[in-house]
Image 1: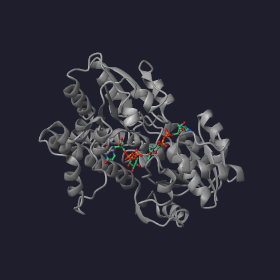
Image 2: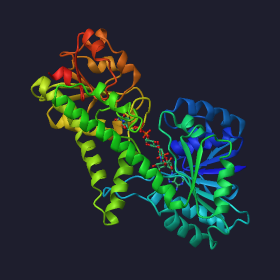
Image 3: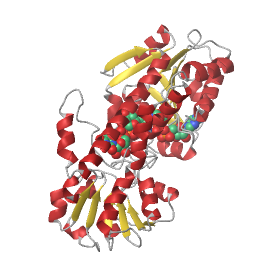
Image 4: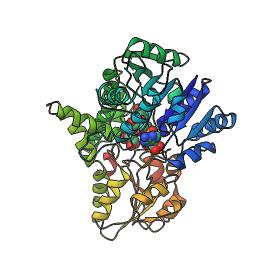
Length: 439
Ligand code: NAD
Ligand code: UDX
């Protein structure tokens, strides 16, 4: 089967490699020339090592190709997956411009095609977007009718960055939202080799499932953070508390690690888009507002720990370890490192930062701070450090590195270090939600 994937980001590329692995011929179409050149050379445009390994294999065999032109590959394909970005506008509302642009191109190919094609929206879009906005563009631009002349589906993606390909191949569930039975049946057949629970719905329910899922994950993290902040004030370590809470199968142990809040390209903007849509429906969106309010304040927990330990931040040199939104990825979108560093600078600190994979992207966001070439160099002469993302290499830091600091104060912003090991290495351990150290 020929498949066209429009938008070769994390979702598009993982989808493309997954279908290539299932034996299909896939073309990735993207407006970003650099991304297309990377893919043509078998390189992933972002840090996802297992994805890159497979990508190279399929590019070499010719099963996966890339192009800056969407029109020809879409014309030649039976399935067209739209995987473009859907970021937040400053109001929180979803920005549909890339989706509309991609849909307009698809509409033109539908106009000139005799074959029955299935258009699949995989981008995260607020409920009713596919059935209204996308459908109108496709029908208006092609003169054809969705559900009759071409198929239309909504197939949300649940992958996590860092395990993009594995999550695509072994998803927790596959949601197939469709405008009609024929479109849904076709997509179900395409997904037949993927062993997972399959949920069939209408288009808007599929869209809602994605937002409801991300809202729950974000809510769990903000809940963990609020409990952890309370524990810290009570001199309780939130670690064992939340671990015991998570043993209740109705709650579950995942996504209960406290820290500096949730970042990344999905949870923050999806919760904002959901809140915006909820309010547009005349509902107060109190829960989502609370989830976001807790998240906005969370980086200041690290600043408060530093202020207490150092007296003041003014003139202090603080090393920020980890700039990506979580360890193991190069993505800096909505990283909590941004408000953390802004808060440190506002308090008068001098900031030196390091990340194993995302330095070049972060320098574009914050060019005015200092950057170090390793964690060890960042710690040199620092009055304190904050671990902002949970890269495994930070949990291996020891006496050799901490002894280079002027004041060996270590703030664990992701609860990824072993407090006893840090203390044995001669440093003072302060963790978000770790009340013991502040007793
Ligand atoms: P991304 O920003 O990494 O990639 C999107 C790509 O689309 C970019 O390369 C961009 O150049 C390209 N593009 C934009 N407009 C285009 C057009 N008109 N024609 C062709 N290409 C175009 O985005 P992403 O992180 O892969 O996310 C894509 C969608 O999937 C979003 O809606 C996101 O919310 C959702 N999602 C993302 C993740 C994730 O972990 N990143 C997980 C699940 C769902
Ligand atoms: C998320 C969803 O998990 C995924 O299902 C969806 O498809 C896309 O959005 P991702 O953006 O890769 O995936 O990040 P995730 O692993 O969920 O982490 C998001 C943020 O929450 C990170 O900043 C992470 O550090 C933080 N987090 C996560 C916590 O603070 N505590 C936790 O217990 C888990």
